Image (cartoon, rainbow, N blue to C red; front, side, top):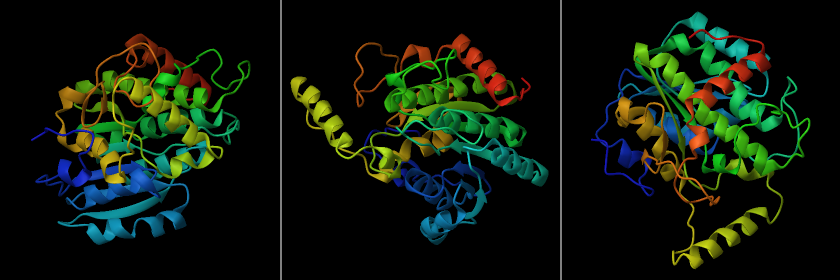
Length: 324
């Protein structure tokens, strides 16, 4: 059963009756918020979850509930991964490949949002470097470990509607930096990466999809200036009132992680492959005004030629070429 599910569905509702015993799942960002809940829900259905986190001590503390809720052979293993350092990405991916155990689902969940101007260890703009390039290298290096019938799930955002990627100036060397603009670029990149990864791997039965989890209050907002979230909510609610709609309500963390587990373990592969999902269904293409909470994906984020161009630019930036 793949539905009907929606914006208020939780991870436990989406996975009700699903047996993931014997499945192995990798989740990045398993030290807080959506990553922890995603890992918990999967391990509770019997999945062996490998949680990747930059701060292992923090992840150990945060994932106590994951181990406590594990059932039917499910469990959790933590590995260190700093997506803002390609040295860390390469070290961890090399260890996983050397280990040789395969994955049925990889959920690229980790990320940063609206950070001040900064750079990764390799000199990339922080958000593009962490949210996109770190995952780009990591996932491609372990792609051979994703079993036929497996799936890549990239956690993107409705924030992709703030901006398309800029392949001419990805590091803001010639563009005035704006936190939300940079976030939008990185989240569009997450979708385009899924589109091209899906094209390259679907012949061997591996599919990829991207999604918006919804508006959730997590650590992701830690870089926002004081009052910034309140200002954004005021603008959103003014727009909603003008449309005769009720005020915006945040999702709970179990509701926010529901689309990740739905897209990874419940939805049909052909339904979500190469697509963008939200509220536990495949979204439709919409253009026009930016509304941070309305549904819809911009056409530039699903454009296959655009996805190929981003892939080539990403390979150039990281100095590594990945086979078709």
